[in-house]
Every structure is written in structure tokens, then in C-alpha cells.
Image (cartoon, rainbow, N blue to C red; front, side):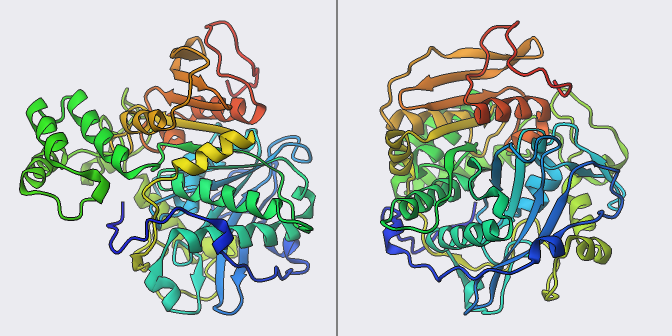
Length: 464
């Protein structure tokens, strides 16, 4: 995660945000239709890509990639996906490596079908935000010098309002927000903004938000940090003595500012022990020169650890950008998986738990899921954060089943909150366990509990 300095920790409040009136880009939908991506296999669904201007004064525009559902696209819900960082690309990660319809092959030129794409469950919208991420840009350099949660939520809301004008058939459709990692901030803050504007008297804009689902999410600074070190010790990556030292001397409420010498010694010992690991999946192989020519269908992962390089190559091909209707302003840097052009991240609340509590009180569906091999925002962190919400469980902690095997574990809490783990998955759950991830998102969208019996399967899709 990005180092955070001079952070404004005041609770996020949508009433402090002001929006320009939405300006409609007439006739842009057909202009945005993607006929075919280079190296793409034949598919039967429509896909679109293009820009939505979120602030005309500064020339700030977000790039989006949208795939209609494989079937029933006229009735299935609209699902927004946001990657985190802050500063990482929803196209490069979400669409090309996780839950999108295609994966990039080793040659960096061709695509293969992802049989477990989430557009089997919904119409899926990927957005690169804030400006400076991926293909999204601003004509005002100061927009890139400083980023922050409030501005990102404001721009994401402005994007969504204008995108729905371009795709009016989705205006009344059930709408859900999903994302992972630092989208644990983005998704709740956008949901909060939507609900605030939905409730305004005489509002002319109503977004039919039904729920949010966030994976391995950043939610609460203190418990995120404590849980990470507890995970390392419980998985034999650091000794018990190092964990004891860190927990005794580190005050994570201060976000690593002014930590004591004893605390820093413990953290450095920990960093030394994990330096050679992919901390986003502690059991996965890492990318090296030799891995390009070997198979990676191991028990730990079914994904090539060098896929980031293939995606970088593919999305920087001029013919790919033309097909995507991307990089129309010829930004003076390569497309990057995580932005190197955004400067300081100026505001980041230390917790989003008050927002989640508000959603639960208002009846919004909230699911949190966690890949159990992730060491960055691990299960232990999320469990500590949920404990702060002081919710009463309505079910015991039980395994849920997929394909007659344990897919993970889940617990349901009062107020429609579900916490589910995904067995054998890292930080990017749909990358490592695509079938289990699709099973999970189907149940979330349907409002159905994950099955806790081997023989009970709600869905009978051939993809299961």
C-alpha cells in the first residue's frame, strides 16, 4: 500500500462533497462498442470501452471497460468492479487477471477465455479510478499531484451518473459494488455517496443500489496491521517472539508514524523473513526468468506468476489501445498496472467501519470475503475488524461447499452481513480460485447463503 502522510482522518462524509451537474455525451454508447480485441476468441456477448468525463473544468476523464452478461443481459444486475492500491488498475487486474472474460496469454498478443468470468452472473463494469490510474487521465497536472478518498468517491459517483445516461437501460437495474484491497475504502465510500444522493429531497437521480461485496479489504488501519503480523506468525513466517515484540511496542493507531525503536526492529525482522515471498499469496511461486518457460499448475496456484508482464505488454500494444478506444489523448507514459504518476494520497480515513455499520442498519446487503493465502490483508485482519463492529452472529462458523469440497468457511451476522473465506486463494481471489469465486458472487447477487451441506448446490450452471 502507498505510504500515507499528512492524512486527514476525519470520518468520510458525502455531505461535504459537491458535484457538477451531469453532462450527457449523446450517442456515445455505439461509439464505445468494441468489435473485437486483438487475439480475442469468438464470444457471444457485447463489450464496450471508452471515456466518461467526470470533471469538464479540469479535463478529468475515467476509462471504463464493460461486458454484458453471457445470457439474460436484459435482466441480470449491473456489477461495478473496483481495484484498489490506491492507484491500481481495474482493467489490468480485475478484467485481465481476475474476473473478466479473457486472460492474456504468455505471448502478450493473444487472449484465452476465462470460463469463470463474472459476466456469467451479471453485467460487469470495470473502471480505472482515480485519474492517473491506467488509461484514466486529467488535463490538469495538479489532479495527479495529490489523490485522496473524497475526490475518488466524488469522481466515481459522477462517472456512474454519466455512464447510466449513456446506458439508460441500466438506470433501474439492481446495482451492486464490488472490489478488493483498497477498494475496501472505495466501495463503501461510493455506496455512502450514492445513498446520500438517493435520499436528497426532490432528487432526479436514483441509483438502485442493493449491496456491496469487498474482498481482502482494507477497512481499519489498526486491525489491518495487527492481523497481518498475527497471520505471519500463525503461518510460521516469523517466530512468536517477533510477534510478541511487535504487538507490545507498535501502536498501529498512529499508522507507522513515530514508531518506537523496539517496534521498528520487530518489523524489520519480519520484513527480512518475508522478503522473498509473494505476500499476496504466500504459497505461490514468484515470477523470474525461468518461470516463463515452466508450468505453474501447482497445488498452490493455477496462474502463471508472470501474468502481470503479459498484461502490461498486451495493454501497451497500439492496436489493443485502438480496439479498446483507450489512450485517445496519448498520455506521456506507458499504461501501468499501478500508477507511478499519482503523488501524495492526501486523505484516507483510518476506518470505514462506521460506513459498514450504517449500511447494515439501512438493510443494504454487505458481504466480505477473504482468500486464505493472502498475507497482505489476511483473514486475521478482517476478523479483527469485524469484531469491532460488535455484531451478533446468526450462524455458527461453518464450511461452505462447492463441487463436493470445502470451498471455504462462512459466518452470517445480524443485519445481513456475511463473511466468507475462500480456500486456496490469495489476495486476488478470482485469479487463484476462479470457480469458487464465481460460485460466491452468484450467491451474493442472489441473496442466498453459501451452502453448508455437500449435496446442496443452489446453482446448476455448467461452469460448476
